[in-house]
Image 1 (tube, rainbow, N blue to C red):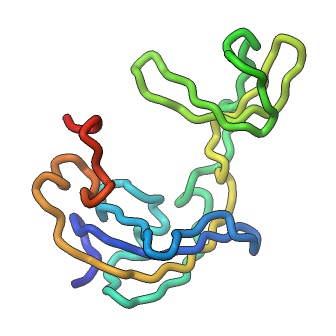
Image 2 (cartoon, rainbow, N blue to C red):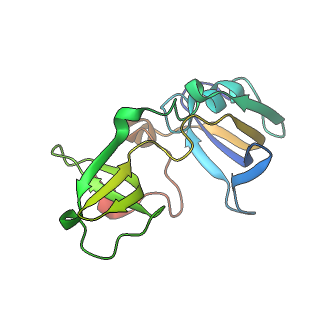
Length: 162
């Protein structure tokens, strides 16, 4: 079965940036996603389109098809009082928006009562090199299509139910 819209796909992958491993799936714990539903970055999803179980691909994903270019407007200065604990440079934190969404950010600097933070994804602006092996492709269930992501063992907690 080939990878097309609305298929649930399982892959093992290694992600390298500038020749260094940044991320990889763990043995026996593949990345499982719903194809065509923005579950993974566009460049990787597009490269997987049309492939079948057992195929191995190598793809270079430019920033515009990965995590985007770095945006200077995503750098902000927050008051130190907004943080409960000690603030660590290069540590990741989460901010809740007015609409309830949660946005990750990284602390770049602490200067007195000001904390400079970066809301860009950590890999924004980076060229990504993926090696991926397709392990499984199946049709999505109606519930998976309704929710926009795959379900399976350990993939859908009751607290996420709508």
